Structure formats: structure tokens, C-alpha cells
Image (cartoon, rainbow, N blue to C red; front, side, top):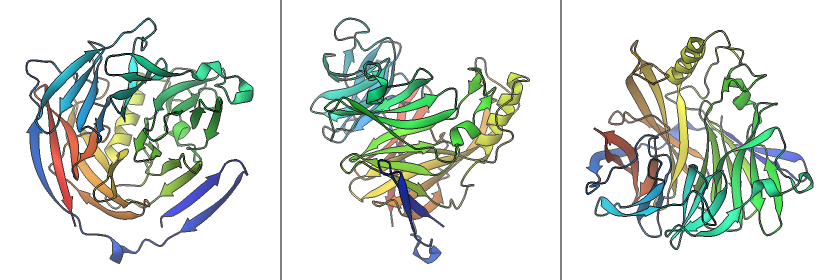
Length: 380
């Protein structure tokens, strides 16, 4: 039974709207699949992190990707399927990005939101246009507490004066959504983990820094910020215009709606304990973020269940993946559940980069260290 809960933060009140999940209304989804490759023209793309530090810009039709080993940005033409240009970044100085970048979002008009050690808007020449400094705000302005740290940042092109962050409280093992408003010099906090999933799926000693936290995704889609969890399918939609947070839950068809835990933390006996627990979770299900199809006004989400073998490659934590079953979940524009189907042509991890271009879902694929995509054209 799907339900939606609206959290009104300022009044500390809530109400819920329940809709029956009528199986007769579940849509029949048809799709076609093809594969395309990008011509790097001799350039080496950074495929180490499943292309997660990248963003497709609908405004100009280019894919922007961060290159860690070169500390720069690749601009890729997805119509011609070739590298368009490469832009170096500075780590230090007035236009410095810091030594690492964990988030990238195209803001349009030749600007990118880049975030790592801090967040800021940069033009393609690497000039800093606007900086977001979370640490400068005091507690009375909602500043980051000593026990908290910024886990990941995001921005939305429709709201240039706002930056968003997932912030982890290491003492309480909780994660929250925070919004930095540079116009009002104020940080607001929103609850995006009411069931304590972050703590529940953290592996290791919860009283120390020696622990493995689950992945939590923050996505900027259309004019919304969407936060989703790796091991539970509930997700949270923030509407900046209305300052409103919506919680969405639904019943998955082909996978469990959440992972059954082995134990809550305290896996301190050995690293092998954590590996076994994490693989046990991933064998059940791993949910990815949501991607918006502007043409069809649909949201797509991939989830996957993996099977592991006994072998382990050098410098890898988990054992070798033998097979992956991938499923596609479809929602309408109001986040009502429409359908969920297996996509046997896909074999990617659900956290790998995917986005929508021209009504097709583009899913990152590493083919012998070459950049490629599996494109899923979806129809009813």
C-alpha cells in the first residue's frame, strides 16, 4: 500500500495521503535496447567510479564528467557520440575547487556546480562564480555541528541561491538533508531518514569511526531535490518553491522493499564479517536514484540484486560479481507507482550513472575500459 507523508517542518505537524495500489492500473511497459560507444579521440575517460561524477545537461545536450586523475572536466557530445572538449580545473587559489570533487551538476548557461571540500558554481573556464560556505554559518543560523560533516552536496538550476547537502551525524549515526540559502544566510534541516535506515544498515562499531555506512543518493531532477536510500525503497522529494518535503513509499514487485539486516552494527570481529553482511544485502536488493523523463513526464529508477562468487580481485573489497539482475521501476510525475519490470539486457550495478536523454534511459557501461551506454527506449 503506497502512502505519501508530507512533513511540515516549521509547524512540526504531519498528515498522510493513502492511495490503494490497484494492480489493475499497473501499466504494461515495453522497451527496446541498443548500445552506443563514445569516441574519445585518443582521450582517456575516467570510468573508475561508474561515471557517478557526471551530469547530462538538457539545455545544451552535453554530458559533463569529472576526471579525477587529471582534475578536469570532459564535455561529451551525445548526439555525435564523441568528446567535444576538456577543461582543466585548479585545486588552489581564488578559483580553486579543492583537491577532490564528489558532486557535479550542470547549471546551464555554461556553469557547473562542483562540490567536494566546498561547493560552488564554476564556468567552463574554471572560474569560480559563486561559493557556498557551509562552515561559515553559526549554530544560531543552523550551522553544521561539530559532530556532523557534509557527505554530499547538490544544486538545482532553478534555484541558484540554494545549495543542498546530505549531512551525517557521526555520534547519532543519522543522516539529514540541509539547505543553505545564501540570500537569507540560513541553513535549514529536513528529516529524510525517519526509519533510521542509515544507522540500521551501517556495518561496524557504531560507537567509533570504524564503520561502513550505506549509500544515500541526492539527485537534482526537474525543479526538485530527491533523496533515496540504497537498501530501502522509500525516497524523499523536496520542493524548494514551496519549501515542502514529501515522503514516498511503495511496494516493490520483483524485489523486497527493504533489505533484511543481519545485525545492527557491532560487526567488529573482522573485515570478513562486514564483507559477508554487505554481500548479503546486495544479494537481496540495491536501489538507485531517480531520473526524470521530461518528454513523457515519468520518473525511472533502477534496482538490482547481485550474485557473488568465491574469487576476489586485487584491491577489491567484495568478491567477484557473477551476475546482476536489474529491474526498472516507473513513476508518474506525482510519484505514483506505475510499473516495475526486469530488464535482462542490463547487468549494471544500480548505483552506476543513468539519466534520460530524448525519452531514452541511458545507462553507463564500461566496455573494455571504453565509455559506452545501454539505451532503453520505453513505451507503454
